[in-house]
Image (tube, rainbow, N blue to C red; front, side, top):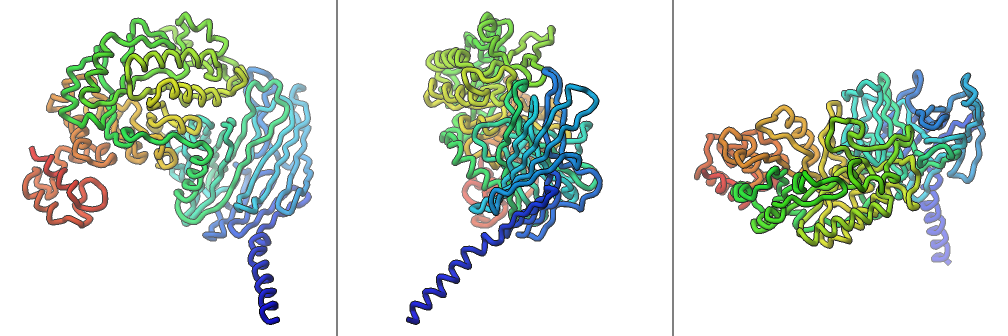
Length: 640
């Protein structure tokens, strides 16, 4: 009998333990639509569809200020009243009628109705914004999803307001990775705007406090067009999250947003970044890095006009060919090239053969979905020419500049006819010239095309297919791209990383998320000797982003002339096995790498110092955390 009662007590205790976390989750809503959500991780409040209070129970930090003046957090709709014109924001305020509904103990909905309009008759129609707020009992995530009803809806958005600008930093995988803090310059527009998929590379925003923070993410795998906004005002700022309808908008009278998920964490930004990275890997199954890409130490923008094999032995003297990739911009015959045709330069075959004989890897460049308006193929593909979702104008590079010789029309890769032509061209190239990699320029350009679906596909879906079809037609090829984001990373193993703009602070978040599968390298990096001021902003960002050392060599003399100190120092640093950070920082005494005792010369004394320090932390020359044989080799190789 005693055992029986002991089991009963155990069952009661077990039930209490299992139920307690559920009891910690509460979700209430009042008649005015104010929502309070609380779990064992956070406490948040909403007003007019905007999150206005956020408390992290894990760290006891509150990330919002008491409401003061207008909020920078927004909730509402963007509407296009006339085709070809811009959008008009209809934001929820206290003039909208409120209706509340409870679906379950952990799910409520607030509906806002308005027929408010300004003096123009075409603005007079009813609008409804429904916001469903739920707590996911399994993960503790706060889940937000919206539904909008109106005419000509472009997008629907919600936001967080009154965030403390002095205590909360925003970390975004955007433009290579950036952080926005209290010192950040905002620019003339007064806010920062990030579009996905595009400049906003992954659908994640991290708001970092002192001991922890919270993060907002979407788990959408269909590449819905989205946007994030950072809007500062004095001591507070807002973060707003928007979901777009697919263009064209004239027949769009409803919209349902993606699910947005919020949760808190303790620690630094890598905690939520790792959660999101794990989700990315599971959701997209990215292509693993080939061994030769993992082993790369250097990318060289190789000279062209003419292609000259005489430079290859000079390269081989300065660096290890087997770990060097030659990026070829001018490999095609410029007198005959009209995108999407790329007839090789007559010297390309000999150059490729010679480069391979030294052990170099070679990557020519093409435009991913470009077509010259002057090409005889343009009338065939013109019906697939991407159009701006608002204005309807054709999209491309320098299309309206009559002085520019090489304009490019952007063709929607959703078009099966265009993909078939491109794949056949590249298959022929690959079978004739066994290149190692193929750079796909503008491959991260994914547009909300005003033409609508083409062959039943969105531009993003066509983008994915073109990558996959190119890879299938060229077995073993490594694909590279111009930038990286969620539409491209799982099919590309290399990506140029554009430099930051003047008002952006680089942060390693994007490299953290993507570089297990896509290695970043430099984007048209200026030469450090001839263009030092232009080189500097690249250098500063690339150190933070951990970008693969990349250099432009315009001619053989740059490898010989003694005044090209930084150029040759850059190559020397790579040859000696320096870290990527050390190589980019070539202005820090790269000419005396291995000079351990600082006497200005590398000699036997430096060897002795390193040998006597085996197993210690310093002098660690290659940055692996310990003094070992590799550091000894660096010093030995530095003997002049």
